[in-house]
Image (cartoon, rainbow, N blue to C red):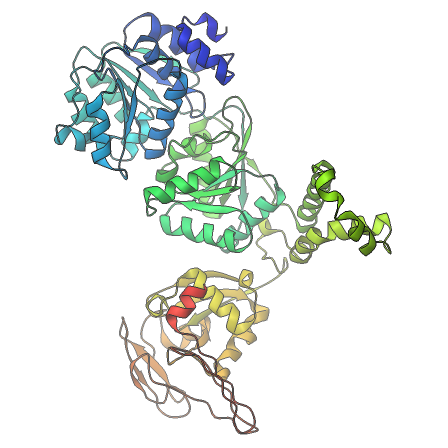
Length: 618
């Protein structure tokens, strides 16, 4: 059946033809004839990406009266992004319907402007529950003329805590209205809404309850916790044409992963609740325009996002709520296309994979992360394909060719090809030539590499976060940041891990007498610290060699029984310390409030970086 057979008016059919729609999706095929032929409540179960907006939007537009300025339809959605998206879709469908106005209201935008738009007259309002309740309390919106209420992504609205808001809104609407509930899953709270606010609803479904989309391949890779980010990079490198979403559990983790990807040269950005509406809009614009390859997001920020062509959904962590997995993976395989859903898990997550399989009625395939050779080969042939398919602008390039030919005249065709390919190939080959199988627990340095854990006496109170501390450690040690993992930044101290072959490099830093803001940088093997001082982050007293007693916050009392140690100093971060050399000179590196270099007898070097300067640089 085609759209022409669904009984839509001529104006809608003209817009549908402009959009290139021909065959309705299963949920559209079931709902549009039903909702255009009679007044009824309906409960529609359909996965994200199956065309739900048209399934309820076209019937609304088919029956709306554009000559009346009364608000006749209300559509509730869980997020700002989905609210805007539904509004834009409705406007496209209604492009030939003169006099029709659709207004979106959501938090993070001017409520004054939204109140003005509603006052001028809007037949359809698309809203987030929180902002609509605010407008109701201000008496800026009247819902007594509503004929249809649509609850889109009803399960998500309830997961986000909008239960009370939905009750307030629905109680303001007339009993004679029709309620259309659309949901990807059907938890008990959604059933409660259907029972309390709907009368003998028709039920339609394009799949079993909570079932995942049929055209999504579900994979999981099991790695050590410290290798999670390396696994993400491996996946991104193995799929050079990836256009995907990466889901994290927290806003902090989302930003950290996005920052790390950007620093490593990937086209990525973050989307989470700490961003302003303007920042979120800019990120989404870049993602929709495909200037971003990977969008790193939290569940809340990404709910309702509808972007065509997403190839991969990567679960950096599995969601706390297993039902959320359905919504995450619904970002891909939209409009009948196929997609890949990948979960990066540790051993403790294996049981949760079984739980998700049971809920979505789909089996996961356990994958083996590609090795360095496979990644390099994939990237090489991707580059070859790009070279083969590149558009050549003959006229524009013609004037530069004589000099190019002259420069390359001593090279054969084969040598030129090798050099062009090597420009990109060498980078991946250098990184992956010794790469191990992450799935077997090895790090990037080799399958048998061992790791060591270290304590450092700098933390968040010194202005560091996970990424900036990695940069600082890399600078003072000359060890690449990718060799630093499980960086755990506490208030006044931190822990980090690296391959054991770098242990002596980091322990040797203590001999260089490096300072940060007049505070001596100290790095110790964590195991030794545990033996000498009890639990991590607790109290430790030095014997002959000195030590400190942590009191929390900035105040520390440091005591030494003699020897070199900390010299018995007491105060905030200790004092200014120097280490004198016995030979030709002494060497001191300091990260403090100013920068200077001096050379006296023999050689003396002083390097200084202030906290504000370091944060600006990193």
